[in-house]
Amino acid sequence: MIAHIDAYYIAAQARFVRQVRKGTILLLEGPTDARIFERFIDRNACEIEIGFGKKNVLGALDIWRMMDFPASSPLWMLILIESLK
Image (tube, rainbow, N blue to C red; front, side, top):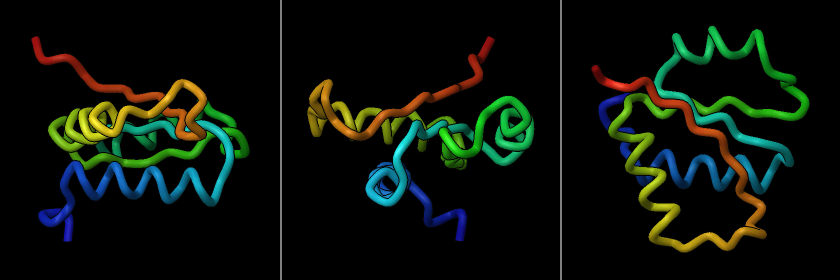
């Protein structure tokens, strides 16, 4: 199932979550990141979504940029990606 998840799926999933639930979406690379960050957020104000890889997360961000979300868009996200060094 995870092999079929791509940037388009992640972008659509986040938009769906945002339609159902108000607040911020924290988009993370993987489940390990989610386990770490869930201790530091208010689950009533922030929803964690897993992107299943850096490529998917960055791709979803590109999709949202191409769709030209206005600043007043109800889709608010915080995206965390580990840097490669």
